[in-house]
Image (tube, rainbow, N blue to C red; front, side):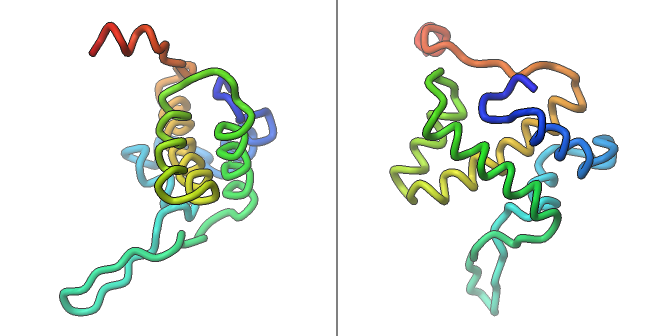
Length: 131
């Protein structure tokens, strides 16, 4: 795969665990299937979000979090994904940012499987011209 931080092991595990990408109507529920979305606690009018649910395949979740760590700490090329992760890191800390990037990677990887398009880096120049 062409995503930074995602190697052949992560890509193969993702394809093996997801199976047929057409079984998900949209890409967003893939994060919930893997167990990387927050739990919802509600009682009456009070609603709280807890930690990630950890439902689904643990090995894939671990690999995606590691890919998030690589994107945050080791990747030198700039992308919207890394910029988004760094904003979360400032707010909530490194580990939560790595998990958030891992969830977003699962959504991106599913979309790439469905559309068969490679990952696209965005140039800072492109963003400046668009603004």
